[in-house]
Length: 125
Image 1 (cartoon, rainbow, N blue to C red):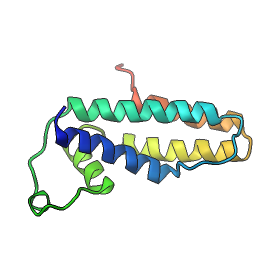
Image 2 (cartoon, one colour):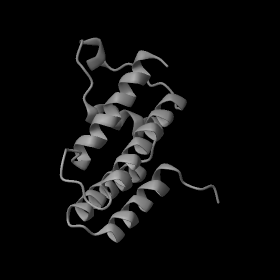
Image 3 (spheres, one colour):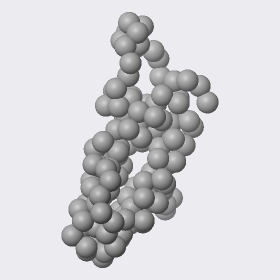
Image 4 (cartoon, rainbow, N blue to C red):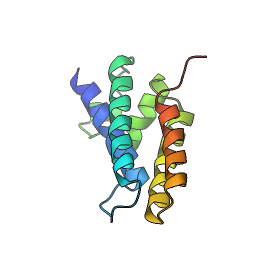
């Protein structure tokens, strides 16, 4: 894996965690499942980035600027590593799962995690 791929993976992980509000909270009925799903999301995004095409280096990279999570995620979407819809489903689903967990609604949490699971591993029909 190249340095660019590793940076892309790290940026996507940081973006997803920042957008989903990953932070330490009191454990709810679904906390362990959320943690496991975050691990699956991180691994899936890393696999997508590693397997996908490498983009051209932009002018900002040549100016010694560090990529932001937003710019890395945008690049991965532009390269087709992950669709914007799938990224939105993952981010929104993880947030819904955390909110449901916070109020003790295990059913809503599991439903949201199911949507995330389908977004990161869609079936070929």
